[in-house]
Image 1 (cartoon, rainbow, N blue to C red):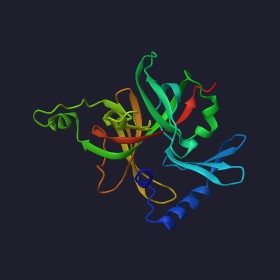
Image 2 (cartoon, rainbow, N blue to C red; image 1 turned 60 degrees about the vertical axis):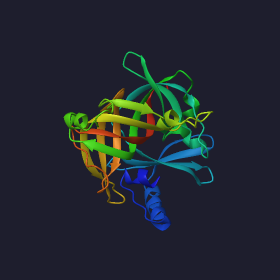
Image 3 (cartoon, helix red, strand yellow; image 1 turned 90 degrees about the vertical axis):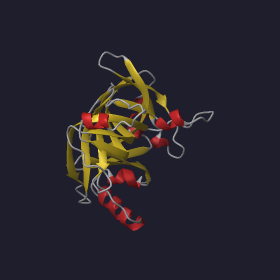
Amino acid sequence: MTNHLACIGIHANDKAAFGHVMDSLLEHTTTAGTTRDHELKVWSDASGASYSFVFNHAGKVQCATPGFRAESRLRVRATGFAAHKSCRFCDPLEAELEDSEGHVLYPFATQLDDLVLVRECIQTGIVLELAPCAFAESLQAWPDKAAYEASRKPGKALLGSQFFIPNPASLMSKDSPPPPVKPRAHFTGHVEAADVRTNGVTGHPFQHALVRTYGGTYDVLAAADEATPRLRPGNIVRGTFWLVARVTAGLG
């Protein structure tokens, strides 16, 4: 989780520091909605960074999910939910990504930061619009497509500059049954826009980029540190990402 938090400008060196940051966020949350048993409160600021907190009616936090107010949109057809090993509010949505004509491109999974509010409304086959963000867990970058293509090692195949592999761990596993579905993807894409933003609570910077890959565009979030490439428009990026989205249309 620490790596994901750095992607929205939250750095916690110890439990005390992390607790202080969470307290600061909680002081500035607004209620996004309620259900019979729970309330969703969300913190967000001008940088786009967000944090969603699920409370029970006793006032205790049941789940907390970092996110981002994504600019990009995807059209998907829901196929169900996978089970998270320890938190039912983190069960990934399984879906099929569709193009503008309704053709299925590939299945994938994403976590929803508003799951507590929308889960009961999502039935198998329903078409949804999602605002997706991709938290970089590993990241490489090349100045442009020519540099990316020149990086191919002799005798080795090079994946295209727009290539998307959903749930990569399941493809690499030889176990039977396969490992659990996770909201992750490995993809390569073109950086269409990029900037460095500042988390309004912590004062720490983070990177935001719009990356076009096979099937659509994702809001990519990455740490702004010496270990992470600085992203610029025109770059080709490749990495493994944790996917989080919110539902923006399709619930009726």
